[in-house]
Length: 262
Image (cartoon, rainbow, N blue to C red; front, side, top):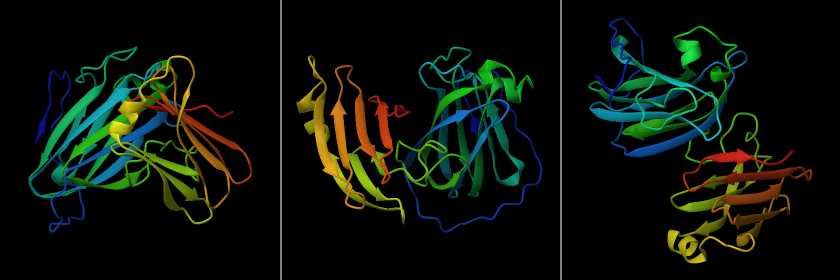
């Protein structure tokens, strides 16, 4: 069943949904963070699939990122016709409304679909409203296996935007902080940067000029990879594709990432 905190919209439906179940899935405790972007007209929603074992519990949080105009709305569908939706339960405010939050239990296990959208699409049928557009952060916690979806890699890298990161020359992870250089000809990666929390804390936040935290080279392209700690407290990675095109990303301590290259 679904549970919400301070939710103003929760719908429990009965129906028939055919889903392939995997009952022997080993117990997992996992967190997946996905960053994406919606457009009310060209891309009004994104969908992600997770496989939940019998008896598993999953928490899903949908937030707008800083400066995003999106008014988030969240839906989840799963086996046995059960579905839930939420518009304004999350504590983090957005420019319009607030983030969305759902918790659900899966008594029998199965495949669930998480649908990321906006109030304007789900409730107001107004795709031209600016609040149907913007960046979001989707966080999934619990006992599940991430199967993929509209805008994600099947892992927890933070540089996982649609189009911008398909074929990216690096994969960036937090907790622990690691950077893998990617051979874009075959998608294989090799770890080239690893920094512990203690090392990052010891480096601190520079006050006079940006600080180089780590330097490496992508062995498949020969392009340098440089990781900075900025005077703002944010982190930045500069590298390039094999053809020399810049790949530059910036993220904060929460892993909210933006692309800076032109």
